[in-house]
Structure formats: structure tokens, C-alpha cells
Image (cartoon, rainbow, N blue to C red; front, side, top):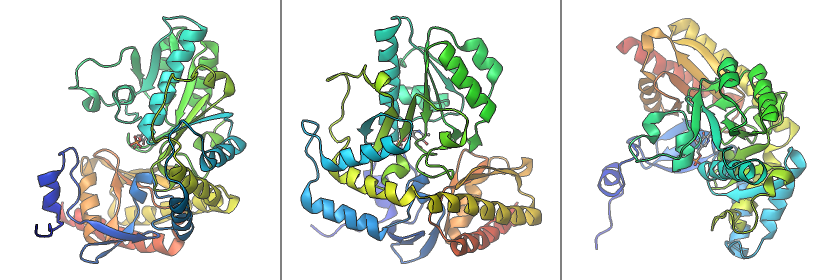
Length: 405
Ligand SMILES: Cc1ncc(COP(=O)(O)O)c(C=O)c1O
């Protein structure tokens, strides 16, 4: 058989058409740089959608991955393993959590959280305590339960009957929450900063009110930190920058810094309802993923790394403001740490993708969050010089879009 030519059209031939990848195919990365098949170089401000917190091919992660690969990849949950327990210990030592459940993706961590909430309410209160409150524009993954909890009907419609008893409210709308929550509510699930929904931060007063209302109605407060966790906002977890402690925090994306792993963090009291056999996953907590995540945790959870994220946010905002002073394209720049969104003004509504494509032409990879927001989620260890170089490219891209208007 002749060697298959690996090109972008092959994607359309072979792959289920649920994605529409860009024309170039990345083949290698180093830090915040990526190269495609033709050896074109790109500066990467996407971080694999807030995943590659330490950039591409970080030498210490490569080392721990290859060392673990020589030893033990997978044993199943019939056994525990050393890297899983080491990682769980770190998560427990450095967060509110007392218990950890490992999974493979953000959706699975949230699925576990939602199932736990339902189970806990059934076991401890009543069979009717099943309502889950979630928020418009929220995103929690693509399993049927999590996508239904997510706040975009277009993602959950068209698959037949949905998991029941999920109420959607306006994010940051305290009056709506006060009116909706009741003793039938078993959980409130929300992101501390809506990433996919447009890089929209929570208001601290709202977070405090959610906490108080959950306490009042014996509902579990689930913070989905899949995108915001592991240093992204300049805190190890974003809840640490707010005046609340949730009952469950979910983590994925940057937890493995590019290797798939997720975690649900909770208390001993809540965890007690997931007894043997109530929930599980084949690959969750496998030694390979946990070894990488353990090293990533050590590298991210330092005062220097977290402080640098906040410094880099300032630099980003300054440079984006300069660009906006010149071209008047953004209404605001919002977000926290290295999860930032440049929100397009009226004139450029719906055109975020044009900015993404123009950036790619300049050798710069950026993200969008909906049609009106250009999103940046680079590696946390991106250098100041790389940020400056990226913003020079971005400026050219912005000029191109403005001049084509
Ligand atoms: C806040 C949030 N929750 C959950 C998910 C789903 O994670 P995964 O794609 O790993 O299932 C995402 C992914 O973008 C996310 O941003």
C-alpha cells in the first residue's frame, strides 16, 4: 500500500465532521511556539484551549512521562498506584478538598460531580431533591448530562429526551437565583469565569450569595474550574481569589498540562455517598497521566509562577489597549490572569473568527469565545518577549481586518 499523504483534506475524508480544523497541521511544539508540516512557525496564544499551561514539550514533563512510560502505564482500578496517590495528596494539601476522584476529561469530572450531587440529596434528604441550577452560556462538557447543564441549547438540542430537572438562569443575576432556588435544588453548578461563554468573570458578591443560598437549601455548590484551575487566573484555583469555598471543584485541561486527566475535588462528607460500585472509569487515575500531572502541579503551584501570571495579564492588557487606541475594535478586555477576552465593539460584531484567521496568517494562534470575543489562553510560562512579539503580530492582523471592513 502506498504511504498515505497526510494533508488537511484527509481530515474531511476520514473524520467524523464535528470539527472544522484550520488548514495547517501542527507537527511539533516547543514552549509557546508551534511548527506546521511546512515548517512555518507560529506563536501560540491558545495553549491548546487553556491546556498546555507549561507550553509544548516542557523538558521536565517529557522526562517524567518517559520515566513513567518505562515503568507502568495502566493497571485499572482493581489496584491503586503510586502516582495517583501522590497527585491526590498534593491536591488535598493545597486546596479545600479532602477527597479526590480522577477522570479523563472535564466533562467526566463534571458528570461525576452532578451524579454525586443527585446521589447525596437522595441519600440524605429526599427523592424529590433533584433540581440542578446552572447558568446561560455556561459550559461543562459534552456528555449528555453535562451538555444539558451547559447554557447553550444549540449544543444539547437534537439528541432526544434530555436529563431532567435542570434550570438555567442568567449568570451573575442574584434576584433570579433567589427566586429559583428551593429545597428541591440539589446543586448549583457554575464556572468562576465563563470561558467558552465569552470570558465572563463572576462577580464576587454573586459567588458569596450562591454560597449562602446553597447553605440555606442544603444544595451542593459545584465550581467548574476545568478552564480556570491550575494557575490560569493567577491563583491555583480561581475560587481562592473569591471569598467562598465551594463543595466540589472540578479540574481538567491544565491539570495534566497537555496529558489527558481530570479530577473532582470534594469533602469527605460528600464523597461518602459514592460508595464502592456507584461510579467509575477505566482510565481515570492511570499512572502515566498522574505522574505528568504531579510534576505539572509542582511546576505551576509556586508563588513565582502564580505572581508572574498576574504580571503577564497586566502586560497583555496594556498591549491590547494600545492596539485598541489605534484601531477602536474592542468594547472591553475582560477575564483574569492568562484567560483574557477582547470583546469586539458594535462595528465588528460577529467577526471574531476573522481576527483569528488574520492572526494565523501572521503566524499567531489565538482563540475565539463565541462570535464576538477573541480569547487568549497562552502557556502560563510564556515570556514577556513572546507576549510582545505576539501582540505585534496581532496588531498587523487587526489592521488587516479593519482595512478589509
Ligand atoms: C469550564 C469547562 N468545563 C468543562 C469543559 C469540558 O472539558 P472536556 O472537553 O475536557 O470534557 C470545558 C472545556 O472547554 C470547560 O471549559
